[in-house]
Amino acid sequence: MEVQIPVNYDPVLSVRDTQEAIKYIRDTFQKELGRELGLSRISAPLFVTRSSGLNDNLNGIERPVSFDIQEMSGERIEVVQSLAKWKRYALKKYGFNLHEGLYTNMNAIRRDELVDNLHSVYVDQWDWEMVIDKKERTDEMLEQTVRNIFKVIKHMEHEVWYKYPQAVCHLADDVYFYTAQELEDMYPDLKPKEREDIVTKEKGCIFIKRIGRPLKRSGRPHDGRAPDYDDWDLNGDLLFWLPSLNRALEISSMGIRVDENSIVEQCKASHCEGRLTLPYHKMIMNCELPYSIGGGIGQSRLCMLLLNKAHIGEVQASIWPAEMEKICAANNMPLL
Image (tube, rainbow, N blue to C red; front, side, top):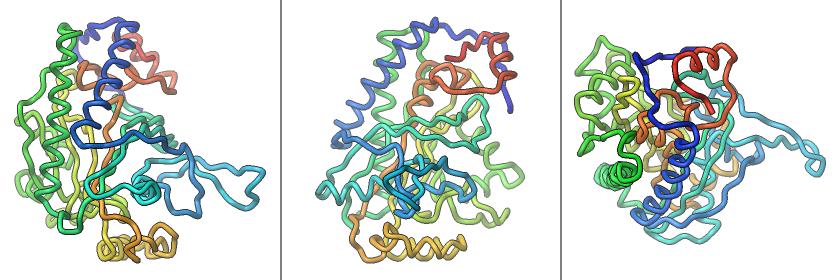
């Protein structure tokens, strides 16, 4: 457990005002996101069967919350860790066409998450996915989509400023693109998170591309990525500078999804070829699912950013260690 305590922190808004602001941000942002990307709102599951292969394995070491049910003897049911795979399956199931897509509210439990100012065992985000043509599996398509999402977030700054001028966080005017390898080349002696902080502080908002493959100097990836949903050459993270904590805040992880070739190559590179026998993976290898681009945008993290909060628990009702609750209460960080 780690808690970062900002000097002379002032949450500005009361707990009740913060609750009103959270609702306003969530209601407004999802409408703007759907309009900008041409996405339709759909319902999503809280849990899936283990045998389907639809759950997100994240870094491969996180334990999903699982249980059984009386009517499905022998089958394990898992609470989703994200909807990265399910969304692509839903594009086919619901008949979405080229350049059509979906978004949904995703609620997950990540029992192995180490909680701190930015991390919780409860995850809430807008998950979205859009059908693209195979010819659009390009860097240009990725960057344009990132710019469209940045545009919506930047617009939200003005929306929040209009209602809560005393609390709004002023954001960068543009997003800057770097590959993970470029950051390592720029700061070879720093850790990945330290590189993120330096560059995000300078630019205000950055998108780090090509996350998942080992970097040349360290021999390790910039950050972990599951091998079976994002294409490691066409993905990345969107980060904004958060003044309250004086550090970078990841708002979104996204990318163009694996095709029939990259899923095999990446699973082999990750020594998890066994996944290729699962139904979802077979559909990709057999070209039975649409090519797509998608990602997740943190709901609580977006509220943190726009209101310049110092702890995710100020904008999210979750469970925290008693010592963390005590420290936050003593330092003017009211946890919901």
